[in-house]
Length: 385
Ligand code: COS
Image 1: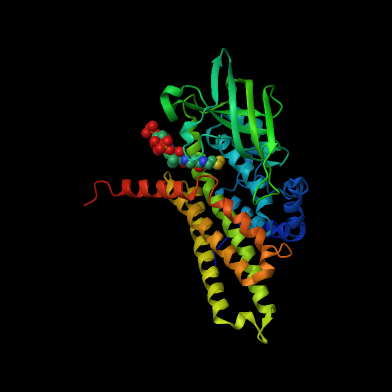
Image 2 (image 1 turned 90 degrees about the vertical axis):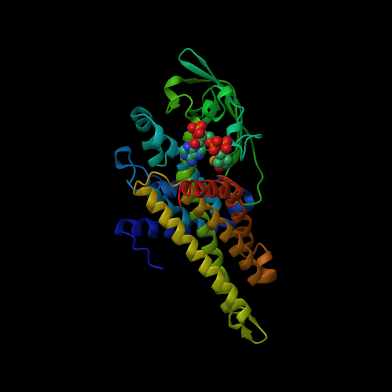
């Protein structure tokens, strides 16, 4: 499919593809096995100027948008989505600042993020607040010019490795979601520590940790937006980043399809390559068709967001939902085509299947995406004859 990328977008995509093939693919299995954070590769991405593709030039970025970020995430995910999510999660931490930060906050944090000097992360989820994001229990109590944070955030991607954390906490529990506020918290702030690194099924190169706040004093200048806007900051951030999960999913699926087609051409059974069997051909045809449909949806959504359309919750949820369900199916089929070899760690498809699973879960489970899509859809029909 031809997506008519600009010359700059082609360059960004090719650069990310080169790094994926030359620097990430050779070490992907080892990073997965050792569950090692890919600092070396983060440095390579920073040197290649890819960390700020979605950040405006005035803050040191390349001045692109969600679409440019999608192009990078897709290419990196083709090689290793554990690496890709470490890159993407910094975007998840940067978007609240980009969208809701004051000029001073933007100048303070975005240039370092764009240069790849400091990573970011986004802290919303808690042990008792996953899908029900409004149920967070972390509190922030005003004390003069400060807020005192207490509570624990769970499963934070880039936790411990990142230095800049937009954190959502309750400033007025009686108001429900409207009583939440977003704060920027820096690593090293007294009272801010990290829990153990989680052991995960997939995306093992990425770091996932608890964030623990114990009487952590945050200056009031670090509020993002206004007091009471925290839930909106979170929801609007997720609307903008869910296509990125779609990009991760299409990258993983492309990686799996590449391995499956190559294998089907080389593997001989009954005296012929298995690619000559219709059973295999039809699986490959379905995988490629579903992948291209998902890519078209993810790209169209990202471009729509960058064009400045105001409402895109539904499309962002659709892109994430469709692409992640597709990636799960395509990677399962890739393992099936490789048969016993597919189940072994000698080939990369079992890792891709493990990595695909999380795209159906994080940044809102696919059940939540269906809720968002259905509610928006039903709203659109209100008053129609
Ligand atoms: N953009 C702007 N505002 C939004 C919004 C969005 N996308 N979604 C909700 N809101 C607003 C609502 O309009 C409502 O405002 P009012 O109080 O003015 O009516 C407020 O936020 C509360 O919304 P709602 O009542 O719909 O909240 P719920 O508690 O029912 O939760 C879901 C809605 C389930 C959609 C939300 O909690 C969610 O997205 N959960 C998944 C969270 C997630 O993705 N977690 C993974 C984190 S990994 S970083």
